[in-house]
Length: 539
Image 1 (cartoon, rainbow, N blue to C red):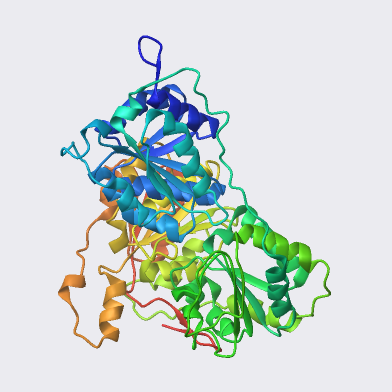
Image 2 (cartoon, rainbow, N blue to C red; image 1 turned 90 degrees about the vertical axis):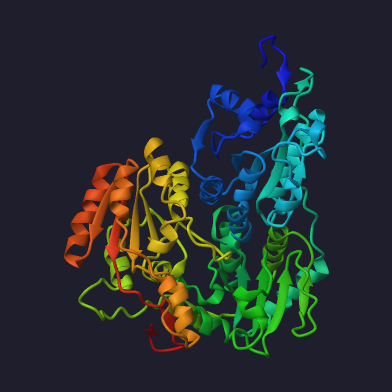
């Protein structure tokens, strides 16, 4: 409240945040949102002040994924807002419910060249499933509730709400309260005929498969999908890797998908991750069906059946209807899927001068408990880590394919699971995006262990250049920077490892340090593991 005891927009927003159970907000400060800072801290909400807006979004993204609930990030206006767009896109593709609150130029000055004036709503609309600017003080609660509802819709994802500076400081009548606001989405029941049609396709299949979106790897959605497979015996997989069916943590899944005779896409499209539903990823004879509000009217690949509506409600309806049927025994098909997805890559050692990336991941993996949280960045080394270290809970870069989020993801993971150890894997190229967030982690006393696979190059692009048949490009090389020393200077614990025998003690010291720790390991620059359809892997 102000000195005279009256409430302003910033007070209302803090009340809304408290009412939704928000206790932590990743943020980066700026002029337009400063009326919020003192009120947020006075309310007991913890602000995690990051060094870059994208990092704040990545932190919130990890919290949202691991808690299966809405997470809120608070950013400043204009360039600060713009800095977050790539990270919000990553959250969108991962179906992660992050509400981004951005400061905004004063309404009264819009159109006159106000400080940091830009079309923030339009910019964020490209990467969010809902984007709005609060237009009047009395709309603050309703617009916040709308952003929250949209984020937690049956296909979750990020939303954005811009907060003009003069709305945050505008007086709000004390009688205006948020008790009547609606924060949940109303879902209509799916069409029963459509449900029966998709069930009939699954029931009549010899090798059925449900391919679900990233949200179905976690929380209530994962449990609902497991309940359906328990009743029907139908195999289901949620895909969250940018490589889709070629997710290295799922072994030879690509070969299995190519054998399926019916595939139902749940809460996702037949996009690049599913080979667009076309050969060679999907057999030409395979029958395709969709469950969710996705436009799949494509002349090149007909959809045999489609259930319009919200995927979560559709899955509930499918599960209820499935209880009335006697389902085939797909034991052989399920056994094939279990066998093929469990395949691990070969890890030959090719150089006496550096550690094989798969070998590095394997050694570190032995120190990672089943209940520890795994964070993995993108890039070639990240694919080796995903292939070799497989854990129940993980945060990866997701279908966006963006790299660089590992350190802020690890911070978010520690916030979401304060009593659980967190291990992150990233490459030396990806590390550079948010190396400064080690200071954020140290300042907030959020320890984790980050393994850097250092091949002194932008290795994913080196691999592409080789496939193109071109010469080696010096522009893809990186210098032997001492990331361990930089981490120590930022308040963390740093280790440099060049010999495999030194790796175990370095891991022990990193864990024992009680600080955000980085272990910089010299590795061979190899392509990510690729699996043959049958008979091992190749690199």
